[in-house]
Image 1: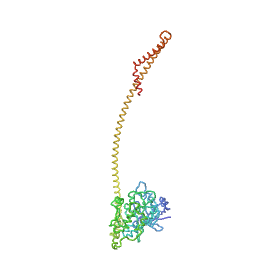
Image 2 (image 1 turned 120 degrees about the horizontal axis):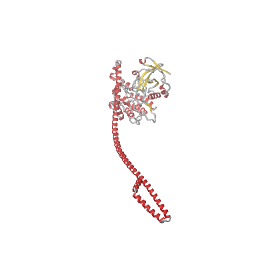
Image 3 (image 1 turned 90 degrees about the vertical axis):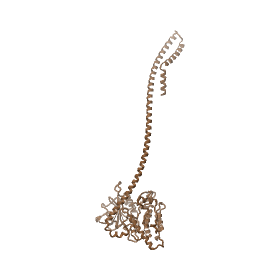
Image 4 (image 1 turned 60 degrees about the horizontal axis):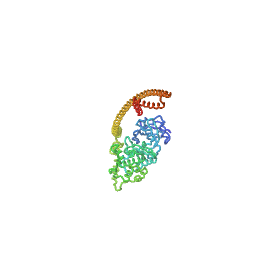
Length: 531
């Protein structure tokens, strides 16, 4: 099917463009986000003051209409992140998650998604036009507000959240005041009816809670986040119930339960459960209402009311006003007016577009005169807010740096001490090594000397052995010649002579050895055995 989207204002140049729906439903349409059929842009014009549209950090909402039917819609332009290194724009996975969730929900208290388009820089969500403005702006303009009326609005919020929770979807960003950079997420479909219908919007942080899968994150608006978000604990559907408790507290009192001077103070108050029901703000509030808030603002998620328990709470089930019947009517009216006055003050303090009550008419009369000044003030306010956030981040980084610097200094001193000890041990081992090397060299010199002496004695022994062999040979020749003479009968008996001669010869050899180098030879042999 074809849809023609026209701009609402002169900046569109009065032109229009053709853009086909991405087609399909559910997961198919998410996958088809990448295919922007029309080569021309989807054009729409921002008109925040007349349709309740607004802009966030990376998204702008503009009014648009369908040429064929004239039906008006809200076009949410989500800036895509162009690269992994960039910090500007929204990751594609986050955009697809938001689209996937919006496609699965259809409830009278939740904004409806009609179409999805894409161009080179943005993904465009065509949403139901919610033109009644923000809930707190509407309540702050009322002259009176009863607890019963507040109950009706809280009940509508609960019904929308109940629809989400039955599908295991957590919104994670329920809030009720309008900062210039953080629009309120609880809107009115049409404020010109006796009981305006609540519409929950902005599912950029919403997640489907998968059973058995642990999910942790730090996100949301500090004033409304649950303790488990502050403490980086596993998150679930109960985080939305805490936010509803904070919203109810503010709605009935005009005061924020955990708001501190800084973001860190606010988060610290949430973690410490630092809140109370001051009589100045809750002096005429029913005990049932305070009980409802107490059971929602439970740090233990198991003790916190579930969405079904909240809907069944007596304060929600009954629409009767809980004030004592003895209170005079004029006191009741005075109390109601005071309550809306506090809501005005809270809304103004929270940078809402709602001016103070006693100057509201004057602002209405001179709106045209101060339009440019208001725009400049908004710009300066955004810059101041951004500067404050940046300063907080710088202070946090400086604190982390100081802690890291102290840790590095301690580690450096410890490592320096260990290195000094290792250096001392190394020098000690090096000295021992040099001593051992000197001992080895001395032993090598001694061994060389002994080897040289042994070689000399060995040569001497070999020479003596040759000399002794020659002597023995001569003796044997003499003995042989004597035996020849004896056998021829010319002398002594041979056996007697041979025995005596051999004995004398042995004695002579021993004496010869003793007179020669026999001692040196034995010494050399001993040295050889020791080696």
